[in-house]
Amino acid sequence: MKEALLIISGLLFGSVIGMAVRALLVEKGFTKAKEKAQLLIDEAQKLSEKNKKQTLLETRQEIHNLKLEADKLIKERKQEVNVLENKLLQREQTLDRRSLNLDKREGNLDRKEENLEQKKQSLEDKNSRLEMLIDEQNTKLMEIARYSVEQARDLIFKRVEDEMAGEIAAYIKEEEEKAKLTVDKNAKHLLAGAIQKYAQDVTSERTVSVVQLPNDEMKGRIIGREGRNIRTIEALTGVDLIIDDTPEAVVLSGFDPIRREIAKRTIESLVIDGRIHPGRIEEIVNKTRSEVDRFIRDKGEEALFEVGIGRIHPDLVKLLGRLHFRTSYGQNVLRHSIECAFLAGKLAAELGEDEVLAKRAGLLHDIGKAVDHEIEGSHVEIGANLANKYKEPLAVVDAIESHHGEKEPSTIIAVLVAAADALSAARPGARSESLDSYIKRLEQLESISQNITGVETAYAIQAGREVRVIVKPEEVDDTLAYKIARDIKEKIEEQLSYPGTIKVTVIRETRAQDIAK
Image (cartoon, rainbow, N blue to C red; front, side, top):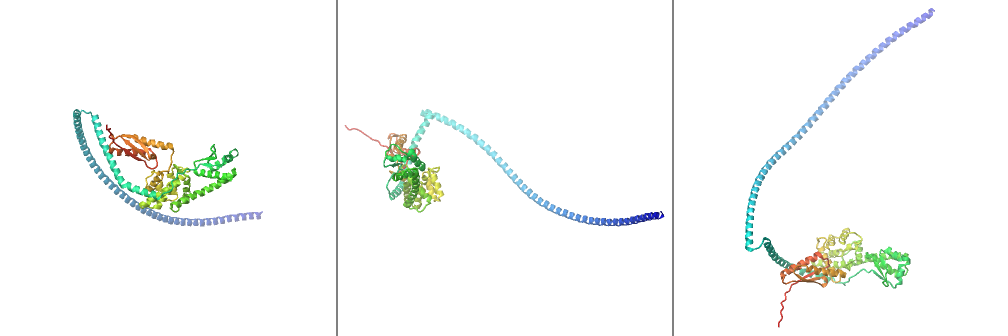
């Protein structure tokens, strides 16, 4: 028991001593830790003070730099403000000067307005006095002459009109004589020389639209069973076939002359071949179309060779060939173009201009007619577009645009082409017109002439190329006859459309007659 107590007491004593020792050790460690922490705190404070000073220095330096930049910017802004202030000051001074000038002008204008008002009042007073004097004089003149104002005015106008009519007629006569002396002789010489140098057979061609058949039996074969052959031909060629009671003939109807030519050749080939059925018709149409294309190109190349202008674009060659199938008032357009080319070339040679260029312009002046039924627009507009497209010279384009007077010519070549075009169309036999239009044109010529004051009667002669006017000799003197001729000429140009020229001849004669008994 005692031993147990001793052991417990020893254990308790040892525990107490251990705890005391442990407490001492812990306190010692805590003291060291506290000292270490204090050292760390002191070092942190020192470092913080150092960083604080460094940051403060950097901040002060940055503030200094910003201040310098701000001062520089303020200085620049002050300079700009000073410049603007100077400009504003100058503008203000300028405005002040202008204001002074305006004030002076306003004062001058006021003075001028006062002067004008005074002058106006003075003129009104004078005008009133003049009107009174004129009224008094008119009254006295009417009393003396026994004419009213209207009668006197009519009398004066009548005298002035009579005097001016004579002067105008005399002036027209004098100017026409001058023009004839300087122009007529040279123009006739040039035109006569050009026409003489180009002399070819005169033909008036029309497009053939009738195909002759060997017999009437062939009509039935062309029609075919239930009309299949004729429908095939019409569908492939685009031409209407008219088979009527006309013996041994088929009429072709269509606006396109090339299609009519293809249909004509196709029917002629079928008649010769004898085999007429849809398959054979298609074969012949394709073959004929190729033949016509070659024929067109050959015609274009022949025209080029005949005129002698060298090479042009192949498409233009083909278009020239197409003109062979085009007519204008019964005149073949390709032959007309060749005539124009020769005439324009000879006129150009006489005047010292480029003969080849004139021929080229004359040959191509109607090129638009080759496709005017396929492209919208007049043949003049189409031709000019084609010439520009294929890089033709400017003189050629100008000749195309101006040969009908739609545009003023800008080159001598264009004027020559217009003259050649009129010559080719105006020669006898070149063009044909229907009887109705011909008679109507003659009636209009006579009607225009007879509506002129002083004209007794008028007659259209020389197939409408001349109109002879007989005037009343008691109303029209020799001088006034020239004015009447010019008035009729101007009215014909305004109201009629005609190829070539129309000559106006005014005849005035006085016959004295008596009978001896």
